[in-house]
Image 1 (cartoon, rainbow over the protein chains, first blue to last red):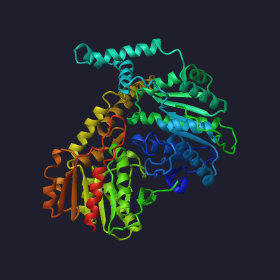
Image 2: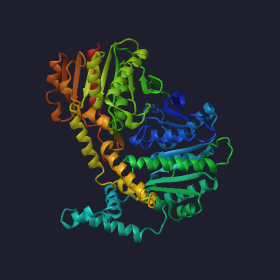
Image 3: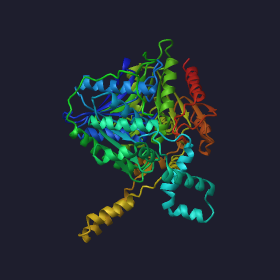
Image 4: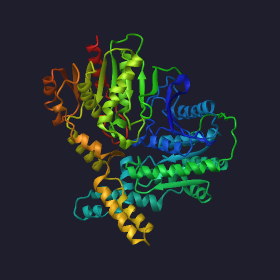
Amino acid sequence: MKEEAVQLGEAGSLVGIVTSPPQGNENKPAVILLNPGILHRVGPGRIYVRIARALAARGFTALRFDFSGIGDSTVRLDNCCFEKSSVDETRGAMTFLQTTRGISRFILLGGCSGALVSLATARLDRRVIGAVLMNFPAKVDEEEPADRRRDRHYYWNFALLNLKSWRKLLTGQSDYRKIGRALAQGVKCKFIGQSKISGPDQQFRAALWELADREVQLTFVCAKGDLLLQDLYKAGGGDLKQLYAQGKVACEVIPRSDHTFSSLYDQERLVATIARRVDAAALVSKRHVHTPEIAAGPLETLC
Amino acid sequence: MKAVQRVVPFYFGMQGRELFGCFHEPSQKRIRKGSVLICQPVGHEYINSHRALRQLAARLAEAGFPVLRFDYYGCGDSCGEAGEGSIARWLEDISTAIAALKTRAGSFPVYAVGLRLGATLAAIGGMQRDNLAGLVLWDPVVNGNNYFQELLSLQKEMLRFRPKPKRWFSTIVRQLRTYADRPRALAQRTSAWFCSRNTEAETEVLGFPVSNMLRTELEELDLLKIPGKPAPRVLVVQTTQNADEIGLKDHLIHTEAQVEQQRLDAPQIWLPTADGSLLVPAQALQSLVSWLSGVTS
């Protein structure tokens, strides 16, 4: 396969790498990988490089690039917020591949904030025929501090089934106050919950239906060990379950993995899962290219 | 939107072993008589320090230096898989990068700035090839064996509260299912698997593989034993209280290098942070820019 350094965006300020398949594009959609948070286009554990090369080996052109101010790309000098600039730059990346390589269909792939950008761009641009959203950061209850959410997630999902944790509990080595608080909050979340759906959750569910109606192939890939998984289930609620049951949305959970898929074994499973889902999305896609539609009003945000 | 500074990404080096680099063009306000090669760390330290080193390159370019940042073979955007890197190969990559820098920047003397293992590699490479006019060693890895043990401790610590990957268990279950009706094949397969674990077992640190070859090379690495000077002028920057670094300055002086040392109160940018942020130590960066500006004036 061939890897090429490219500069795209306004004044060539964005830096990216295009990984081209050895036998040419094979008339498949291109995959664009979006920054996972503030990490540059290589990704944690160099996972984005692995994903791009694996996809190229399967006949997909892959582009990894850095948003403005991240990695090797230059900072923006205007006052455009990241929520808008990241979507604009992603659309610019699609246009770049369209004009330089004649590719007109795209699958977006992003981790964490990259997943948010992927979803937002998919809603705005009909060239997007699929999106792989890794550890999607659905809206959370901001009243609960982040460290307590992590504790709750750990104790409810791992410590209860861990012999070492029980040994520490029974030998007086545990933080009993922390455990009590985590378990109490867990009971509240699991069994009491919230009867009213929040505004952001409603928007999220509406976005899922909108994309499903357009036959955009959405895949959520989540690490079992990441507390964002529970947030996703909560945010998506019954709508997510319904869409999943209808086969309009895919949810893949990587067991015993964490937010950054820190182990090589996690990475292998992640790459295999993504390759499988991208293959599936490419097969299902039957849409022709439309002229990209520009959003008429202010950019909607999901969160 | 107007670009602040010109950065040129490109691939260079031998076909099939191309390395990725970012060349920062110098500000036209003042062009220094020297170019700078940034030798990055590897593994998770590379990921965590990328932002800071990019900022360093930008500041150096603003100060008038042509700058090249690059990824070693098997790292970053360069060719090669993660487990294919080695000290020997990375030393060659530094020489290749110096040649690429000179092609783009002209025949100015080359100064290297290395962080962590990148500093160690730059020092060894400079000593072997005598191709550096100056060198900044930013928290260098002095003893490779201690460094490797630190990596293992970090791996253990970072994964302490994360679900443990039970690859061996899943592998056993999978093999039992596959060979359930072929006991002899199962026995052979199991025997081969145990042998491979003993001889070809690969270590990993926070998502990066460490091959047995690299591990052996690291265990033999010792900056206190390099026989010659890495560069005529050396700046040792220390932000840690690492016992390994005691004696480094004296040893480098013994090699007849002109050595300066700075102790800075700055974060260890190569380490993971609790909130996932990437640190940019402005004071440390400015200190490096000032020193390089001074030696090239």
